Image: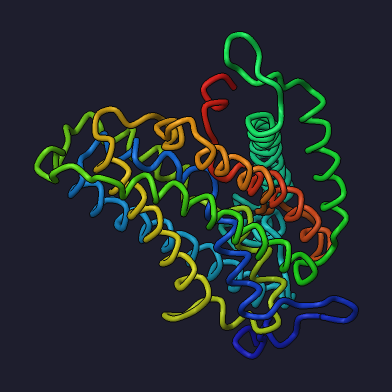
Length: 342
């Protein structure tokens, strides 16, 4: 009977180190806190302080609900097929097979279509993140040219890519957990520097609009969805947990981690726009003064080198893909003026 099969208790863990709840929480926060958080003040500029604050939590709840649907759907397919673990493509193939008979010929193609889009999505993002990381390193250590831009060439990208290749050899999320924690700490330092400037000499709140025109909603929603979406990593985290039942639920890892992430997005977006108003830039670090303290934000950003996940056949390979995406994003943490020239 389908109801008698529990994927959580049937998962094979031989030779594979599973992550604890705390390690999974750390990975989740790191995978969801990317460079998109730096664009949140610009997002608020399209809709205003009050409207933006409400919409961030509303859209965060929508994204969280969608993730719960994804996880629960994969659990149902696992029970139906009586297998302990399914990846994205396998889950889609199983779901199509459970659907109407006229969809069955699409079982095999659906799997490859999903795999292709996930691969393309992660490849494109990782390429941009490597470029961002190289630019941030250049902001700190590269000589400056006559036009004020750092002299950064492909050698910086090559060094970042080399570090990336080393980290991708980490085959388990449990081993990667300390690195993810270090990236979170580096991100926290960079964010603290940004918040120091944001909370200095705040103007009267009456000088900022509380709501914006309807034409600003598409811009706001696009930025928020880009910033919050961590679709590629969710299944990898849940599949590698020692206690996967703790991932979902009212007070589960997913809800707790996303609550922290959404709140950080809302706070930085609100006060970033509150501080700089109509002068807020596309990336909040572009508003920071050119001093050593602001430069340190770029340094911490380049040190923390990223997270997330893509897809693969099993937990070990998935962890390796996760490491690749992880490396490519923490490296970007707070980005600065180099972003304009990227």
